[in-house]
Amino acid sequence: WSNAVRADVAPDPLAAMGNVRVMKEKAPNTSMLREEVRVELFPSVAVVDATFVMAHDGPDQTLEVGFPGQGVVMQERWAVHTPLHAFKAWVNDAPVASLGVETEVKFKAGPKGEQTRRETWHVFVVPLVKGKQTTLRVRYGVVAQWHYGQSYSGGTVERDVVWYILHTGAAWKGPIGAGRIVVEAAEGVDPLSIETVNHAQPGPASKEKFQYYKLPAGAVRTAKGFEYTFKDLTPTQAHNLEIVYRADPKKRAITKYGVDEKAAAEKLKTLMQ
Image 1 (tube, rainbow, N blue to C red):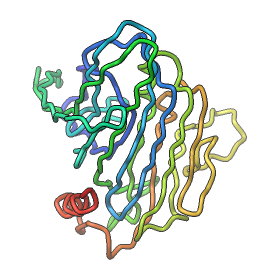
Image 2 (cartoon, rainbow, N blue to C red; image 1 turned 30 degrees about the vertical axis):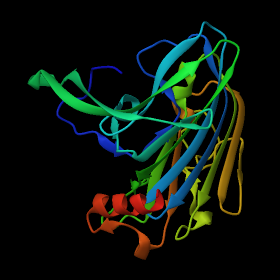
Image 3 (tube, rainbow, N blue to C red; image 1 turned 90 degrees about the horizontal axis):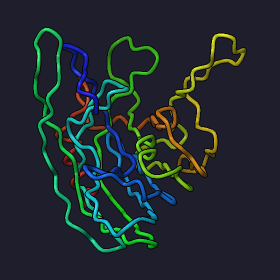
Image 4 (cartoon, helix red, strand yellow; image 1 turned 180 degrees about the vertical axis):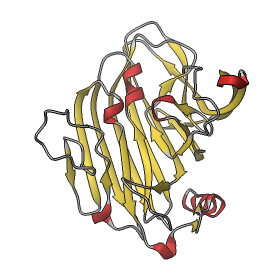
């Protein structure tokens, strides 16, 4: 991550889920053959269950891999990740211990000079064997944030938003061989309301009418939401999925000022049992 951040501006909270990433070590011989992801949307919260199949063609190696948690900056959005709840990990179908590692990151903040922020990473160890495939699986929950959309004039925001971050998968060797991301509405969520924000801005010469909400190429509607598939993808920031949806107002964990983080966390605790 770059240490340069905007001076005296608080990053937005980002309810994000995403690709596994290597921590300190390098992984030039490890590729991601495929990923299978299921995102279940509930009022004010979401649960993700993701499987990654990795191939390794170098010497036997042990890697620490991790997922960004509370406080980790996503520089290109000027936002910080919100906490991951009830994080669990498996390697080759066997449960493994994971550790919430808190680190201090120094950064420059304009006239205030160097400052420190805290980041939490959910880390576990993965042994890789030359010529063998290794399957990683994770499951965790996030508290959704309010989606303000193109315009906001005050009052309660009707839509929730969570992200699935794909572009970090580009850190592994070669493209992601294949992927399938299933996004589904759970009880209390309107499946017809599930959309993704269109990050592909048309150029000034384009005659195409810009659609603010548009599913990515390769996605199809389903009865409960949508399914997005791809092959041989080298993901960029434009591939990240900003998923917005509407839920039953009576079942949302909100106050008149925003998300009720404590109530939403309690809801996740019950769902993740």
